[in-house]
Length: 406
Ligand code: F0G
Image (cartoon, rainbow, N blue to C red; front, side, top):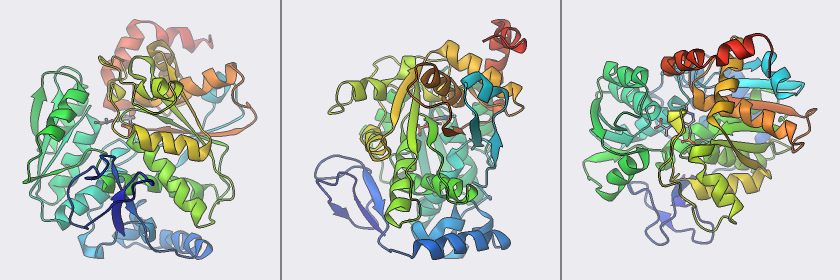
């Protein structure tokens, strides 16, 4: 494995111990290059075989794919059996979107009830491998809970920076439960994150998704998905976009599977943002040369209330590689989609519902074929933001949809 600049035109390489997150030559984010080239067909068989094993590294839906991850001794891996999320068929939701073939992959069904665990298992393993004592992140509430839980497993101090008044109380409570040190920041997520980036502390290992080890874990979502579909990729994978680490990781995972000849078709990535936090949409429409920031991001889907997504270039690369689409949806569309996902017996937090709202919009506008196959990635559990449910009820979104009205 090799740490290198994610800009192919730069390609600067870094030492395994390098703890920066940006290229010292061009300033772009870093990535992990997997230097081995295993036989793709043999890997498929091996990954399937590992499901028969009870070894901790094999029961993890991340480390089962360790052949394409940074290497650690088996005993050094910090795992809680993350990943392993099933595919659930969309019922009323499929009807609502106007499609026939819709499945949800619910990454909220993970140890800390959100998708972050899938990257965090690798990043905290790396933190310990480096001898870190303190790990830190800025967060809209999910990264923080996940980091705190994994750090607690090995006695690392978890310091989390939360934008004051902008994080669901359920998420704050969860981080308190895992013993995190909480710092409330006056300002939004972007300001909290920039504050950390601009004042690096050599005693602290930094675990936001600009950390390339987070992305390595997160990319395994695509490995697991393809394995679940017996290596028949869907036409589209739909994902919410916030700081854009997840979208970037999915693009990287798909690039790697394709390079090893493991998938013959590349699913198109659909990234869906909230209208009040749509920096990638603006950037894409403006030609993608510079980030078009949203100065004061605002959406009820607080998890993705982000105006200056750090992984925007990697996300654009994922869109380009998969020939994907990016769009934004209003808070009202998100609320309705969230209610429908609940009515399917699945449930999710508001940010995750952007996926269904986005799909419905793309079908209505004719931009996607309703006969295509879709996998929507749900990122956070329904109980991550119970206040949203009660607010939507007060606004009568539940009642409106209960009788099948669209
Ligand atoms: N969905 C949920 C539930 C999230 O918590 C996040 C991000 C996203 C989607 C967007 O993912 O940033 O990879 O594009 N939450 C971060 C946090 C920012 O701090 O918990 P992304």
